[in-house]
Image 1: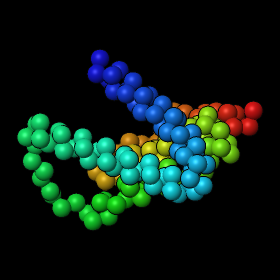
Image 2: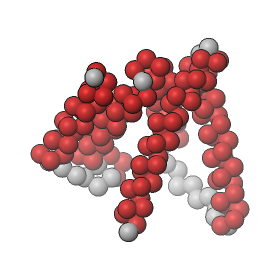
Image 3: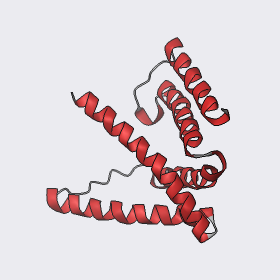
Image 4: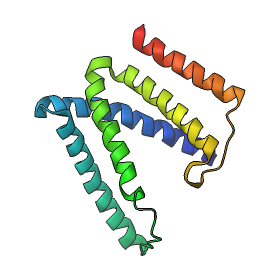
Amino acid sequence: MMGLVWSLLGILSGAFIAVQAPINSQLARGLGLPVAAAAFSFLSGAVVLGAISLAVTRLDGVALDWKAPAPWLFVAGGVLGGFYVTLSTILTPRIGAAALMAFLVAGQLLAGMMLDRIGFLGMAIREISLGRVAGAVLLMAGALLVRFT
């Protein structure tokens, strides 16, 4: 049952990404600069996440336990997210939200397969099987069909 719940939450998360791209593109038009729109998007997200983190730690009595992660981990996710938001803001009006989402999912799948294969940052290693390759090829073909038809 929980597997279904987690899967549905994944779909919901993907839907949020689809809605975020046109919102940020509209903001970029209003501001005249895609990078500024991405910055405001990140700033608002940081404020909300900071408030949620504060509330959770206060309500649950959770103490932050720093285990000194690698220094690059402090910025890597934000840097990658910054590129994602900025590129999505630029691409949405040029190729459309559906094509952007199709290519995003295809890119996520291809990167995810590589990360699984090497066990990136301690993830479980999963081999690249014929079925996974077939799924990736079909997903890429679907992305191209969404974009060019």
